[in-house]
Image 1 (cartoon, rainbow, N blue to C red):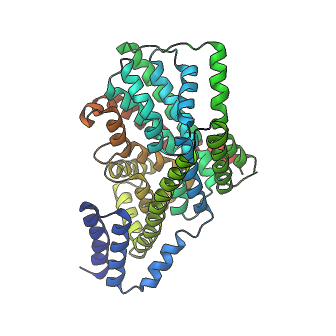
Image 2: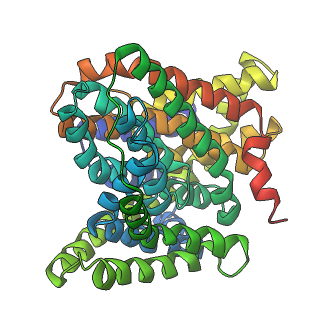
Image 3: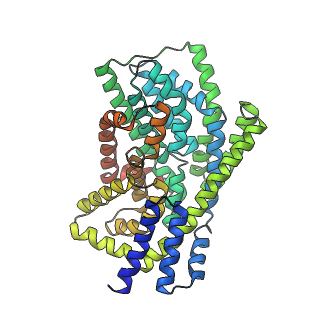
Length: 430
């Protein structure tokens, strides 16, 4: 074998081996990169420089702010108020608690930007509540985890930030806006499915709220929901950049949780800060090491080889995009979403551009694909957390997930082949 083939095998093979024996992902990326650099006689200073450059971005500053804002909102009593507000809107429908679950995820996704945070916060309340009202635990988990995928689409999506970084500095403002319509389509499609299933399976309708009580619930929830106005309104009106809106949203979240809802005592605030710092440390390490790893992928011309492989299947853009979707769906079942975004974006984005796909559009396609991966075994993080909360096996949940998978795949095809659904809102910033 020639040197390039050996180096490619070393880079990818060592990374997969370290992953298999459960070495933390940042260490797996870093060790594989260093070993390959030594073999290729690339100075380690070059790898270190690439790693530091991975963080040298104004866009990256949004990451710690959104992590902290999401934690403040999740722990500050926002989720309970959003659930009650959603229940006043759609709870009286047949299968109303399932509908409220989806609406809650739509609103909470626009605050936390995280599928996992949605399940851990909203799901910890709604999954037991749905079970008490007669829903199968596996069905409650299926509704919760699939609706949480909206959190990776509706801003402020943390995964959108990772994509912007990995893509070399795309407009985060446009990426945020691009996720709105696909996210709402996904939520609306899941609500329609839940209504059909409720009619067929006799799911109960929820309780009606008195008008005065409903108004009180709405006013209380609107204080937390104003975070969405700060983030998106500030971006659209040109008041803030996405990074600046993250900082303002964090301060607002702290004021709401600490002084308005009074649900964030100092002891809890310190715990939130500690948890956010732990999450940020992990994210920083992964972004740094993945930047060095991505440099070696480019140096070894692996993206070009992957493009050649995909185009060997077909030069037709439709078939090629279907092949990329299948690749993303398959990998999404095996690895964590954030890691895949950082590793695959440098390889697949150039191919998508060759196919005539707008980078912003491709980012949303990737989010949906890998968001579905969060709900699929064997590594689906959202699936694992949901099943743990619902105290139900993955096998039972998978049976209830089948129609939800169909809906999510249908939305993926719509977004893939109707780019206007993704690109219309970002075009308003031009």
